[in-house]
Image (cartoon, rainbow over all chains, first blue to last red; front, side):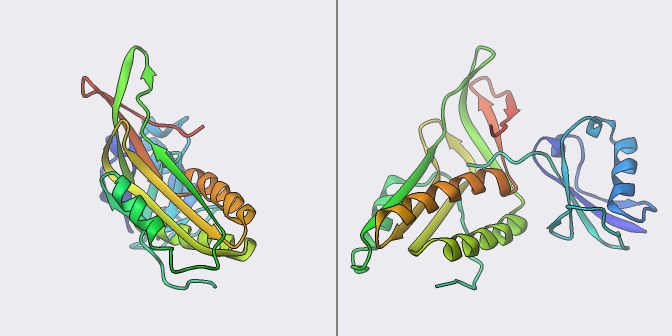
Length: 76
Length: 147
């Protein structure tokens, strides 16, 4: 399946916005895969948003979902 | 009381002192208000490892930030008896000394305005997907972290 990846803050410096062909069932699964593809994520604090909702617990992922990868917020 | 429409909080560039003054002036017809509380965030020229921050470049996940801000706005209106709440956050490059956040609450008596303003600032900093990149005079940068 294909998912859309968007990234922000310092993570956007090493992960470009892109479509990713990947077979994962859940957001926990996806994290494991992302950390293999982008080893800079390992040990970093980050949150995912699935289709513009912040992921609090493991969620199922479907084809064409959009995933945002977000480092800690620093507004204000 | 509760506002259903999602409001935009983002402005490109700094929040100008004139904008803030006009915003205060716009309340002169709301004569049931007895107290306003205002927080202004200003870009500080921090020194980090011998280098001075000359500006902060702000970016946001705007859709998510506006949805989250809407939830926070509703919760704060439900918690405090406020007459008004206005929030403006900058995007783009904001120089040291310029205003990047303007939070403005008003109520009949001072306490709800003051407490709601404080709570809003804390929640904006911790819950909205906004990122600040601190730019040094030599054009290198580091990503800001909220404490």
